[in-house]
Length: 78
Image 1 (cartoon, rainbow, N blue to C red):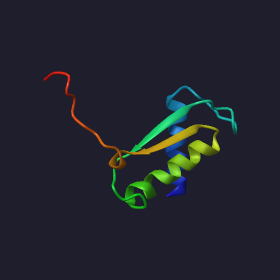
Image 2: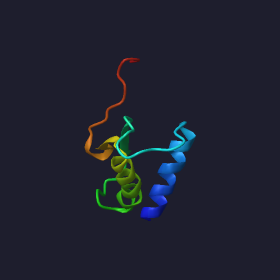
Image 3: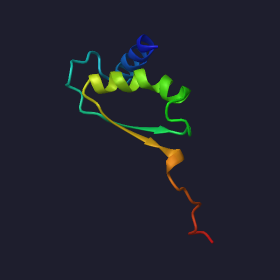
């Protein structure tokens, strides 16, 4: 799974215009929205290698768990 995360991350860097990346050079910020109510479940296990590779490359990663948020519908339209 860890190799998959690294391969996906490297492909994203290439698609974003980074031909090569050096350790700690990237100044990107990424917000990861986790939708699962299970913080140690499949979603976390699948996204962990990707998030690890981002952090190793110097990317600032913020994870938010949507399930923990109290989301309400918009009341502006009445």
